[in-house]
Image 1 (tube, rainbow, N blue to C red):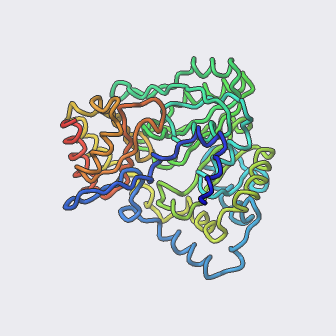
Image 2 (image 1 turned 60 degrees about the horizontal axis):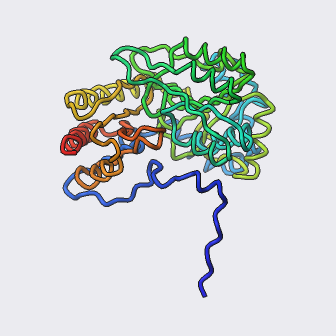
Image 3 (image 1 turned 180 degrees about the vertical axis):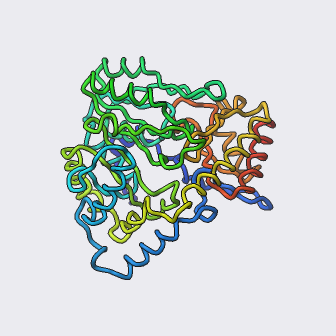
Length: 394
């Protein structure tokens, strides 16, 4: 007799990962080059040679790298802390304020699990990274949406609804979660908005988790303000050599936070995964020390793809998008897809050999889709034309 499956805990009913980026499995038509905009193409943009050499050497070295303390190899943390102190504008104690995690995704789960209690209210920017809201709900807390107005006039900065953030804090939220640059829109927060977030956190004795995974890839000489430089004692920063550096397959990230929170994250990591993979921690050693000109070239290559895709999309009345300011995402608004976004996403795959991520993953955005344009340049442009064609038919 068949045994009924064990019933899932209630929290799983609130966390739907069916449409998470990279999960799509629909067949695509033959004769077209499939472009998967749900994540970057690490064949088109390969890791820095120094990373390949460092990981290869670590594998050959064996014992020195295989097993680390739960919060990571001390010698790697010392290197990373020194460089990130200079990058973020605030000193970091490598022993007490930094932990190496199994990717920034793993770091995000450890961070929120170390800060959120059942029944808490958590301010979550919308739109923002899909896992923020899902993890908050999994922890049986209540996300409170704070709008980021990214549909501004060309050249005007996106603006966080600071009045809504104040209201969320006044109503009992003691944590804000957001990404900068914003995932999915590519908007970069202004220095004024970062100052205001820091001031509101201090006023309401609140804490902030900020994902800065793309903070090295900023376009057009735009200023970037690190929250740590304004409120190091009230924030946890997630960062890693994943997207810009094409090292996502190594699954190593870094979290910087006050010592008490790093201690909690270490305890949880010791249960969940023990540590970030010991050998892969070597990928952090050449981070921020790539060959001269490497990062500038990486940014310039992505800027050209961004500009060409933006030109394709703005030439059509069927779609609209914001010019990305940092990272490698475009968030398309497709008015005809409102209430039909799943149909639109499916048709892109079956008619155009294009995979995108649906907008509802990032909040209440029923007519939007996200593209990661870290792709082969010509393939991305060709795929953009096909997206427009499907949108116009829709």
